[in-house]
Length: 293
Image (cartoon, rainbow, N blue to C red; front, side):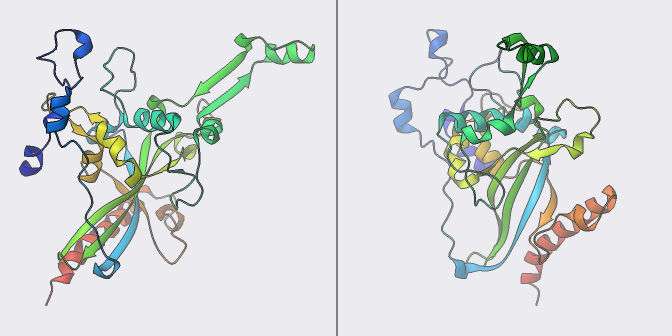
């Protein structure tokens, strides 16, 4: 871990060029000389031949944003009084999707049906008309803007992230490895987000799934606040690839159509958690079993 930190580029500094800036506008702007010296790019994945994969297991996990260790993925939720270099993971994803820079966005974790930002509007926004607005409609009048309520999903509404990844044993290097394949922000259904009659956990839906390998450069450019040293933040890409978060397995690939744990262990949160730990330990033991004689 120390070696990994030591090779971080100087451009990862949150307040880049702050000591050399003559004006506030120059903070965070690197010179051409700095750009040419820095090798500021995400660490490339090594090529893995299918014949080198001795064993693999695909798992889906939940990252609960209520846990303190996962706070860097959630905050800041308010961007009004904070610098442009500080953004939550959801803000980074949705802004890049909206601008068209992030194109590999899908409906589910099997990445079969693509979505554009226009397709996501029904998931991210609710438009409702008040009773006074309906009265105007019935009277043949145009609805006044103040009688139309708009509710948008924001970074503060994100409850958790779901990730899909694959654990595999690389026989060429003789070790168990993990590769992140997809990530999805999860929030209450926008149509029931303010409905107190429904339990919050029952209304949670993944807003969209992002094919992670194509989002690495974007997530590398977006930095995460480092509470231990604000001068040396890390990128979202590094945080996720290094698994610097806590997650719980909620599904694995299986013969039953990749069913969720809650589908075969119902109404018992403790037993569901124990089953998640059992799957995790089975994966960990796989590496040890490879070297058993």
